[in-house]
Image (cartoon, rainbow, N blue to C red; front, side, top):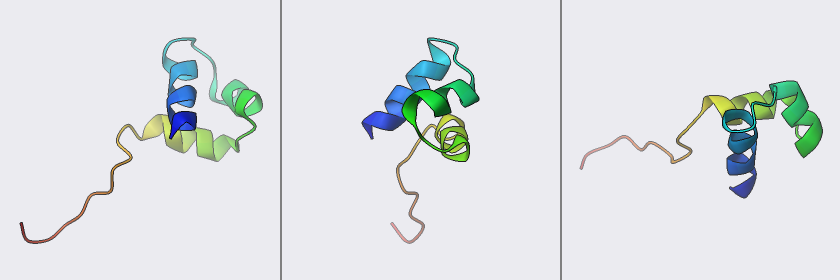
Length: 49
């Protein structure tokens, strides 16, 4: 989970590009893109409450 926060920090506060973040963190570009795009990583559960 810390990696997702680190990736988001690099993008939002340091202004790094997705490609640069991918190189810094050694994650795949598509993974970085997914982490930036998604803010809430909690699983949405449907069903009766």
